[in-house]
Image (tube, rainbow, N blue to C red; front, top):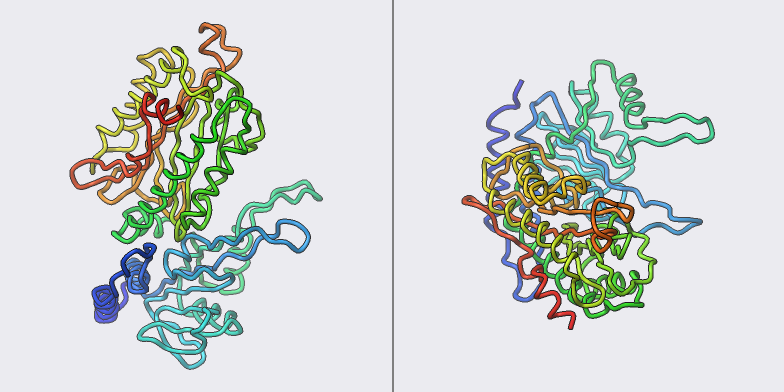
Length: 435
């Protein structure tokens, strides 16, 4: 059963008007997402729900590192996408049929949002954190389906009793038991549809993160030399992106030299680099919650060996061929198949160890719902070849070499735009910069 058309139409009209009236960004300042766009996103989610369903989002809690020290705070991505709020422990309820809390009725409820306690703005209610249980019971008592996105509801291992605990499943089961007739579902499918195509403002954020990533990689190139340490390249990259204004990194920096270049998600970064090594640098800045994800492979000595260059050229060819395929309507499996075909034809099929693409956005492996490319998606193209140290089918100079290149690519209405194209990828250019 759908919610009344006039209510939906009014909400969407309000969102569009607010977006049209958003102030222009001051010249020279960082890109940002205006409040009008967050309201539009909530309106779009509301349009996907019916009057007997609601969606519930919980802001991330601080995470304990050790003792009384927390890890740096990072907001839950769905909550951040819909609110722009970067403080812990908030609650967002989107209910097209309306919710009444403290004698106020609205279709969007924010619980515990800083600076907006106990107020009503249009169709949105803002109440203090002490109203959390009241808000939850209010929505659970009037809907049949509740979509839930909560970052602390996940799998944990009860090591003391040696059994896995699926907290998400148990929590939803307990909530349904307390509210007969209510069914809970995960909100991932709905949010994947909303988040997979990026707005103009989101693309500004991603472009900014990529630009800072490029500056960081260039600084790391200057630090790379035999006898240096992987963590020195990490420090050069991360200090450069922080100086540029990034929030930090979008994932732990991967700086793998020599045999570590064979490990796709290696992030210990504690090996001393040797003459003749290559280094795989898989890194990304994060700006306003939006990620970059770029990989470059560089020679520690400043020049690739003949064998390293041969493998690099194969990987680069696969990269370029995949980008040629990108356009709306192309199946993602076609990208995988093309990369594998190029690498297989060159005789390196055994040395492929991961896929060639994923989406990028608020998460470095971003939410999505479609297996077919759409204009406005941002994806990676990241083929790789990893030849083990003990591989006896190839001459010794080929062994222990991992090569990966990765760019962030925007799917345009007619093809593709490589957003990270300004970051050196041509091996000859990389060698010149290192010299």
